[in-house]
Amino acid sequence: MSTLKKGVWRLGAGEIVSAIAKKEISCQEAVRAHLDRIQAVNPKVNAVTVALTGDALRAAEVLDRKLAQGEEVGPLAGLPFTVKENIDLAGSATTFGLAALKAAIPAVSAPHVAQLVKAGAIPLARTNLSELGLRPHTANPLRGATLNPWDPQRTPGGSSGGDAAAVATGMTPLGLGNDYGGSLRTPAQFCGVAAIKPSWGRVPDHMSLMPSEPAISMQLFMCQGPLARQVRDLRLALRAMCGGDWRDPQWAPVPFAMPAPDKPIRVAMALDPAGKGVDAQVAQGVRRAGQWLEQAGYVVEEVDPPLVWEAWQTWGQLTSVEIRQATLPAIKPIASAEAVTFLENWLHCFPENGLATYMGGLAQRNRIAREWARFMQKYPLVIGPVLALPTPRVDFDIRSLDEAEPFMAASRLIMAANLLGLPAAAIPVGLADGLPQSVQIIGARFREDMCLDAAEAVEQGAGRLTPIDPVE
Image (cartoon, rainbow, N blue to C red; front, top):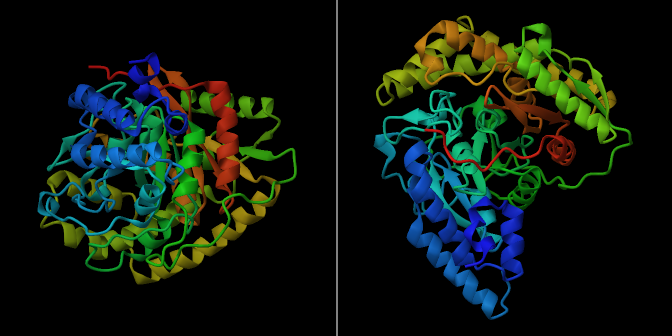
């Protein structure tokens, strides 16, 4: 076996697709390499919950046969990818980390999963998440806890911590997660990989087993998106998964490649968004990223986007009303004490409120969006912290309010992007005290292309941190 074949699991998604197209490796070799890596590494981190060995190898065999016969295959032929357990994958349980749902097997895949499969990508495994996708730490009673491969005493983040850890350790070149309040970007930061939360309406979304339509904030704030080790792989995956699907009436038929903006592009660098405090090392990482953008020809100015704190408060007001009125009463009979404790800590950050606050929050969201749109006429991109704190320790979110509350406030720039439906890419900028540091780059709605362009410029300066072997 060639050196390339021995190191397939180290390759990025685009590199694997290219190697298969050039017949340097087969689809089956790509799948087997990652299945072997899962077998070797997953016991140390518990990121993968179910390896889809038989189905993945059969799909790879079919693709290899088509390639040998010169038949048409998709542009991502043979690319393995993992799928978080709150995303529908036909024939595999959508558990949400609950024992009660361990047999909840959908007949059809989520729209974006189906699009990747149609493009030739191969579902490799299911990945862990926080229970019901709630906590910012990945653990649940059904699958257990996922460990951060850099330091098992630190959280891998949540709720997409399984995919982030799997991508970081080379168990998959591409992971699928989702983001309601940082569930793609914080795990990416804590595990040292790249991710993008797309614009609201960019990637079609639907869950076939949901007993009712999701709450309004879930419809407005939740986005499906990819994690990878290279920015170009985020672009590759996102292009393939953002086609239309009738199951999602909120999908928007907007081209992925938009008109090029006038240059030089001005970037607002928010070192301490809303002036509520930022860790010195986190701020230093943002400055480094700003310097790399300047070297790439961007104009970077230290200035805050408008109403960041108001955006955080509005996100919290809307979500907390739904949690008090619907989520908490519904999950108490089935959820663990840890999940309930986290929600109670969440609610502690936002005062008791009701319908008037909810209606006012929806109205306030429009005002904040208008002010951001005005700001982005001058600064089309915003760069700042993902989380304004270093990677927290395991169970920080339920141990005490003294740990949970600062985390919520440190997520303020994260929540602003979710509230407003804006795209945001997370990209590593190096290490501090042996742990990954990252920044996020937020763009105007449907300008994922600009976010990814800027993230690639940062990546060129920072280099890649992963794949890594887990620290035990």
